[in-house]
Image (tube, rainbow, N blue to C red):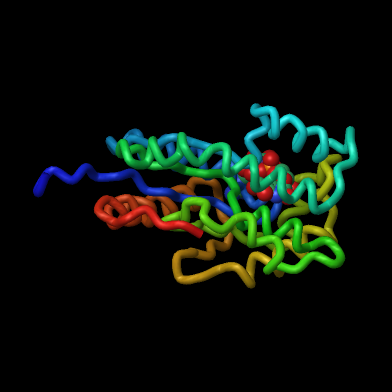
Length: 210
Ligand code: T5A
Ligand code: NA
């Protein structure tokens, strides 16, 4: 019916290397959006709660081995299984703030020997395309001040550096690169202002695919 097109929610993703503050900023953004009257929900990849997510969790915690191609496809499958729910939420007007997505999938797998960015991107094709990506960057020196890496599989300097280089290859005009070496509060204010514009401009836009 003309004039009654429902406004959809925006699909906002946070990417960046470990300890760049993604989880902190995702929660803050959801809070600020809700306070501003924008319906928003937080999602996270990997979603470790599903059957596939539990396999990914065991792999990341190094309690099992999974062949490199197979684990790449499991990370991707963990996004595919979320698509029906994410589509429904976005169509019903809920803005999604997502802690890591497809770009992490490609950046970390392609950091492994003999993996190309192109190969890693193939199974991601057709997933929902984010309206905007906030890419948080942090120098290894500042990241080190936020504590030592934990014991999870990719928490090593060399892998993080390769993943960062891959993120640089993946970024396009829908990304905002943010130097995350600021207070949590300053970062959150900067991101919120930008996110409100994304929410506005996404309302009438078609949902697209990767
Ligand atoms: N992965 C992921 C793949 O290989 N393929 C995929 O498809 C996907 C989706 C798990 C791993 O999986 C890989 C990538 C990862 O290696 P995860 O569960 O998201 O990914 O875990 P991490 O990214 O490792 O989460 P981190 O907790 O390390 O990083 P965050 O979320 O960037 O940082 P955050 O917010 O938790 O903050 C870290 C610390 O810094 C402090 C916080 O208080 C906290 O102590 N901090 C700040 N300190 C000073 N100033 C600020 N502005 C700060 N902001 C936060
Ligand atoms: Na995190």
